[in-house]
Amino acid sequence: MRFDGKVGIVTGGASGIGRATAVGFARRGGVVIVADHSERGARAVAEEIAGLGGKAEPIKTDVTKEADIQAAVALARKQFGRLDFIHNNAYAFGKGWEPALAGDFKDEFWDHAINIGLTAVFRGTRAALAVMREQGSGSIVNTASISGLFADYKNSAYNAVKAGVINFTRAVAQEYGPMGIRANCVCPGVIATPPVVQMTTDPERRKRFAQKVPLRRMGQPEELANVVLFLASDLSSYVTGAAYVCDGGLTLSSRVEL
Ligand SMILES: NC(=O)c1ccc[n+]([C@@H]2O[C@H](COP(=O)([O-])OP(=O)(O)OC[C@H]3O[C@@H](n4cnc5c(N)ncnc54)[C@H](O)[C@@H]3O)[C@@H](O)[C@H]2O)c1
Image (cartoon, rainbow, N blue to C red; front, side, top):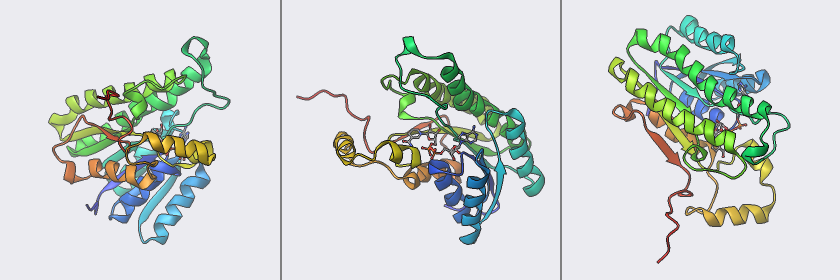
C-alpha cells in the first residue's frame, strides 16, 4: 500500500487514531496535513513524521469552525495542488460532560456532540468534495464507531452522532460515486488511545473488558489506522459506502447460547 504523490488531511491528527493514520499515510509516501485544534500536538506529529523521512504540514484546526476546515483544505490545494484523502476523525466530549440518561441530557453537551461529531464531518466532506470533484477522484474516510451501530448506556448523543456519520457517509458515497469519489467510514470498538487509556487505568476493569472481546484485548490505534489507510488507498477501489467494524469481535455476538 503506497500513497506516493497523494495528499491527505487528517483531522484530530495529533493523537490516537488520527495520529496513527497521519503517520501511516506519510510512511507510505503520502503528504499529510495534520489538522488538530492542539497546535502543539499537530506540530509534534508533523515533526515525528519528518524524523521518519516523511512529509507533513501541521495546521491548527478547530473542526467546529468552518473557516478552519476551509483553511486546511486550502493549504492542501495551494501548497500541494491536490487532495486525495480526508479523514474526518476529530472528536472530544465537551468539557464537564458526564454519562447521563437521555431524559437528563443537557443541551450544551448535545449541541457540542452534534457540532464536533456530525456537522464537522459534513463540513470537512463538503470542503474536500470541492477539490475532489475537480480532480474526479478522492477518498473520504470518516471515523464513526460501534456506538453508531448499537446503543451504549447513558451516551445517547454520541450514539446519535455516530449513527449519523454512518448514514451520511452512505449518502455521500451514493451521490459522488459517479464522480470517482469514494466515501467510507470505520467503526472502532475500544481502542487504546490516550483518552481511553486514561479512563481504564484500573487493571481489574481492563481484565473484565478484555473478557468481553473475542480477541481478548483493546485495539491499538495503528490497527484502526490500517483499516482507514486501506479505505484511503487504491486497494479498496471497489469499496464505497461501507462501515468497517474494527472491534476485535466485541459486537459480533447474537448473545444467543445453545
Ligand atoms: N478510542 C476509541 O476507543 C474510539 C472508539 C470509537 C470511536 N472513536 C472515535 O475515534 C476518533 C478519534 O478518537 P481517539 O480515541 O483517537 O481520540 P484522541 O483524543 O486520542 O484524538 C482526538 C484528537 O482530536 C483533537 N480534537 C479534539 N477536538 C477538536 C476540534 N474541535 N478540532 C480539531 N481537533 C480536535 C484532539 O486534540 C485529539 O488530538 C473520534 O472520532 C472518536 O469518536 C474512538
